[in-house]
Length: 143
Image (cartoon, helix red, strand yellow):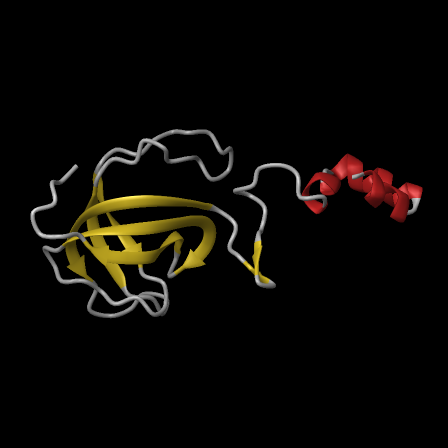
């Protein structure tokens, strides 16, 4: 961070420091809240959760351009509040999930495992999106 301070004029460095920009610019702070790069492409900011559940319905029409599933998911004890980062957990429940572009909707009644990205963006009107999805092997116990 000292190299960044030497490069910036003193008034700009002070303003950045007071506004909290230097830790983010230096790559400090909550890693989940800062954008990461992979091969020069910026990765989404947010939290990712490995989840599983049963598909209850598949929307006939995409919502906001994204297919939407209703899944009864298992509990997610490590779920974090997007704003505070505090672990608040999430009980098992049924809720709608948009699918990221390129993912195929599974059949109703199928048990699936999926990765949920919660980033506060607009994914068909919801602040989260399924970014990976796979059927669970037959006979997998429900959690």
